[in-house]
Image 1: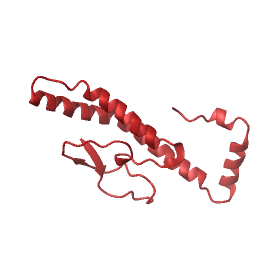
Image 2: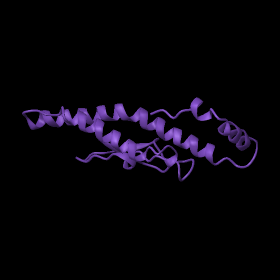
Image 3: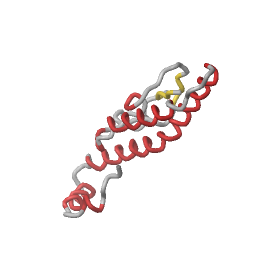
Length: 132
């Protein structure tokens, strides 16, 4: 079952909304930014779509049965499992990109100066690697 946003994000027009979702009850499937828009601060949009496809195709490969009714149930289960597997990671990536958006667009001032000092340290990227 695919989900789409029932309302725009309340905080900012560029912030993806993962809050209220409305199910689409059709034999359709969505992946990538169509389901979970991700800001570009981690370059994870296309990667998330590839992860979606890999997980979903693996789950669907097990949705075989000799009867159509049993196959429908297995597909329904695959879709529910897909959402349980993917949702935590997608929510984390989306939240992290929002955090990076805020960090990268600080107004000039003490917070921006502190960020710049920390990032200019030679080992900042070693101490703060992006998870894969």
